[in-house]
Image (cartoon, rainbow, N blue to C red; front, side):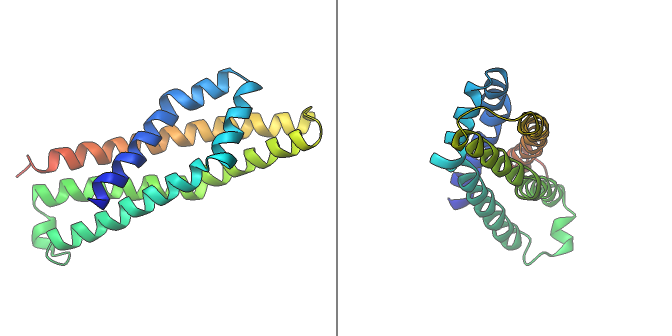
Length: 163
């Protein structure tokens, strides 16, 4: 249940962010920046996504351990085992990319946005340039995470039919 609930939250959040939220924020600057600020600091979106991803990966590893009889290669080499392995690896890569690349960029964007607000709401040229660079990198990184999670979801759904 933990795996399914948190994986659903994580996947839904990543897909929504990649397909709708970030494109909307990016196309409605500077108002979009205010929405990003709310997501980062008021609603703590990165923290929730990190927790959901971590619980998904850890519970998935635990399930895989039990399904594979303690990571037995004879089971892992089966079509079912390989399909779950590919999906699990995609999820692990998505999680690692999210926490090592996307999360720091989002936090940095939030800090810059907060500094702009504290200074009266008018950004410097350097702040604008950094925000644009971070926004592009975060959008690309979020798309990467969403694609990896999609691979994981497809593998998890298909695994029961592969034998």
